[in-house]
Length: 505
Image 1 (tube, rainbow, N blue to C red):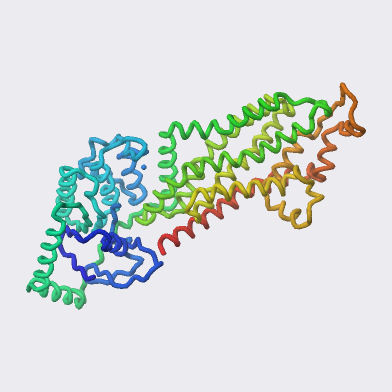
Image 2 (cartoon, rainbow, N blue to C red):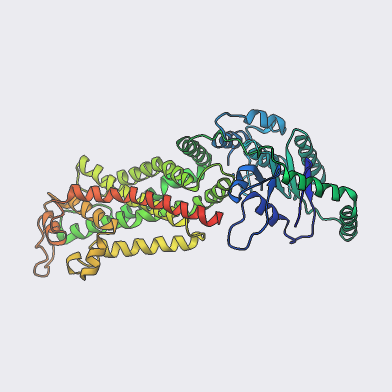
């Protein structure tokens, strides 16, 4: 295909499925290397490199308001804010504080939403804007307003290329007329003159500079701060999402507390077994609540990140870090509510310092559950596969690392070594020491028991028999447990860098 665009507004007309969108994807640098892509793109007579497409063209294809969307986009794209001027230019000032909305939540109208999409691209100060079906799904009046808006912007030194597939009852006649027009044009002197001008442009020595987008981009840290504020603002408007984040662990704690009621000190009444059961539930269940949050919320943010990173606003790993940082306060508060209720309600070791240690240990599996899920969502597109994978990894970790199903000392050597790679090993050792160290048990059986049923009289016996040396490793276990968090953060950055390359190529 040969195209020479030297007008302000250029409309690409063709049949459905003929490749109009694919052409715009190729020109804007959004098409990958999975197939064969040949051809060249010239701007002002200069041949653009493929990696420069994104720097020259903008492509117009969420619970934030219009003002927030444009402000955050401006902060990501430019050092100097210009969203107010853009809103005025596109007649969006009257809906500045309205939520954009989507399929679930109502918001601004379809035409206004289309204007916001165009405004987001104008903030990057591009010379050329490509629009894929900008009037599809709009009524005739709104579509006409969008076209008039584009024409007005084009007269202000912007070039527009648009794909439009609006249906017509006379589609066959229209196609025939278009074919006649194109044939006549190719036979006209104007076409030959245009070819001559193109050749002259290629032969010029003093070619005009390529009109790249504004290069006044903020630093990586500034972009991360903007993404953090935007993600936090988005979540704060989702009241149900915030409520679920804070209450999931507590609801689970209610079930555990109702089942256990109160811990006894009598061995014959399950004093040891009940405590081990609570430790098992605290470590084994907390990753699942984090996983469910990530599977429910992150895929939508990932889709937005894929689009905005292709526009060159930021890298995908920056969105990953912003998401993780914004969930930390909610995770800490959620776990603290859960541990405060469960620890004191069922009557675990009555010591404030031990309660804080218990809370600090339970926090890590909860964060790891969500963090690991997000890391895998970076390279696996299907959230259901990630959901199943994280669940299986958690089950395997609790079986190998906890020592509850089978004593670690009695496992094959291979599994003993594998247990060191699980956060469950260090979590369970820490909670066993935190709860059992210094406890004295009684054995007041109201009925005859089997011989040896009352052999355990001190909590230190549980530690020495099941987890020898755990008391001396207490501080080291804490360090090793928390080292999983920066390790997964690093793995997540690598994961989203890989995703960035996969989508680009």
